[in-house]
Length: 292
Image (cartoon, rainbow, N blue to C red; front, side, top):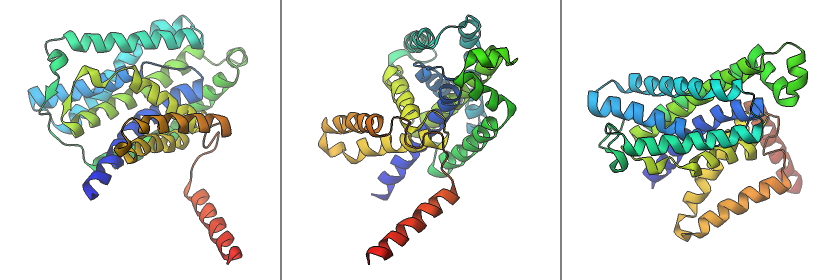
């Protein structure tokens, strides 16, 4: 039982890393991406191939997976962002990019096609996933509070006014996309070295939609909000796994409930902090004593 719970937490943390990266791009620049499963897959296959075929050190392979995803982010981001595609057209472009990467992985010899890569070293543990998650959250927080992060928020609120103030829209959006891609690649590398087997069918548009839903449900102006939403969306289907198909119904109902009762997301534009948690606990304790 303890091993099962540890596995759920590890999976949740892996997806949190990808969701936090997407939150920086979608939540803080206002552009929706429906192809982030591609960056997840690129990181997973890059890291997996390096350790599976070439016995590369796990940490070096993980960094390489993130770097490769970042490089691909530049290659896909430069033409699409330079063309100043509107949000809906950009989302369609990223959706096509995600499907193109999946089809490419199914036909490359080094990825072993639809057979996938079995026997990848199981290097990802709960402490490893937790440590990387803390680092990603710290870097994301610093990015948001930097001048680039403030510029990204200005672009999200009104890109015309931001451009008139001298903000380089292309530079801000591309930097956010690359950071998001790197996070997705790192998450993919951790995923590959946790499940020890990857194949293209694991990285469909469903994964991209799940990550985007976590960002929207958690709060478009928050980093920790999408992280909390991701944990909830991963944990609830697992808890309800005994209910078979009804667990997906519960997942959908939860998402609808959040959109109806908390349209700004779970945390909106706020961040989860230790001070806030202590305050909630204190209020809850006081309320309990009052009823007593």
